[in-house]
Image 1: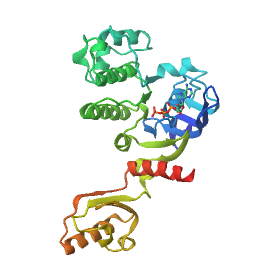
Image 2: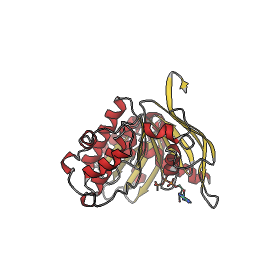
Image 3: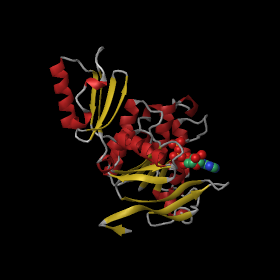
Image 4: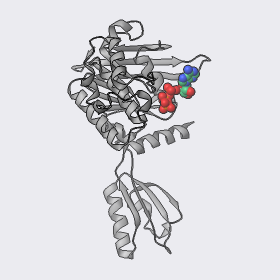
Length: 312
Ligand SMILES: Nc1ncnc2c1ncn2[C@@H]1O[C@H](COP(=O)(O)OP(=O)(O)OP(=O)(O)O)[C@@H](O)[C@H]1O
């Protein structure tokens, strides 16, 4: 369990999941998560994120490969793993008639070493909703109740399946803050998300799943390294993309234009941006909607989907 001086709380080796009918949703993936790390699983719809997380939670047995959580097989040794983990599923499915406090108490009854409900309702911002029935909560509030219940047992490992889906911008930021505080207290967090800025800002490391395989993994900086930056703008009437200086001389490695709207990709952002601005200044041209972006996880994500499609 001790590799490179880090305790690997989650270890996944050549993991496979096959559904009835023979569909292989997870096709041999490997990764590990160290104690106190936030690890994000990203991927397009149907990439295999939930199928993977369910194997880590011990809800199903893998068709092949190996999973260890806290050194145990989460499926065969569920009793050893479950009390030390917290799980937030995509759909909580609580009794609609119970209040928030009653739901937390009911859940506490099934949780080993449960903390008082106030200790989990307060950090997710639901302390003021204790007496509100679950059916009256907004979608975002239900997500936060899901999270509170996952925290009841003071877990060492937290599995969060799309924890901020349905939350507004403030709720999302509050959840990120809470997840960071948990990490700082040495909780290991594995989350899935569709929000690339969430993974970029929150995860220490991440893996991008594509059709059941890991297409890229590492720190957000490692995954975006080598991906091009982007510049886009609209030329004024009477100007055309052909009026720009030769793009290869600007360091451009890819471009598209849609009428007067120009999108450039470059691995030399400063050189390309400077050349475009100098050209515009000399030509007396205003570049409307000018947008200059460093390589981002979004670019890496879209690039992976594009490359894989091209490879098919
Ligand atoms: N019970 C099942 N039987 C057969 N196929 C399934 C089953 N559950 C999931 N799948 C298929 O497995 C693939 C992976 O699904 P999964 O839910 O793991 O993807 P995901 O990455 O979590 O997607 P999303 O982002 O849409 O939640 C999909 O093609 C899905 O249709």
